[in-house]
Image (cartoon, rainbow, N blue to C red; front, side, top):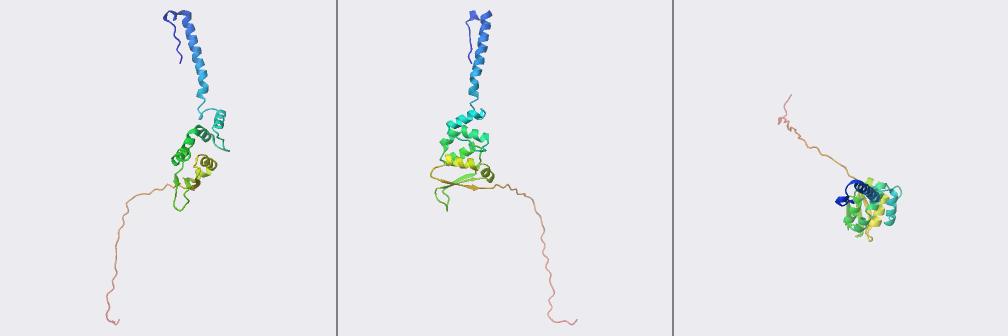
Length: 183
């Protein structure tokens, strides 16, 4: 912030009032000039500005794409491009966009060497299929074929408790009859 200071012999009377007025004016001008800079945060700025930046970064908004994911795609476009093509990069790209994936499997037994399996939950894949296809097409390795594996998570609980029981064995014996006794 600009601080206007007058020599000590001018800090009285009308010149002091003029200094305060000039200080107030330039403070206001500085605030006016900082407004566009504060609006440049892509997560909070006007959608028109986000669309312009998306055009510069060659990102097109998908049909029915929710606004927060679109803003994140535009905001992280450069970093996502740097992370493209690597497994850790794909994890980071999906994490930045808020799309959880469980695992990325490469070179699996009984499959071709160039098939990469992305494992995620069923609801994520069904809700964001077009976006996930676009992300794999844009940021995936070019010499790989991608497939999706759906995993359903199920939470289970096991109760531990004490179980007591008694065991008793009763054996019935019959007297041995050796001869036929008349009744």
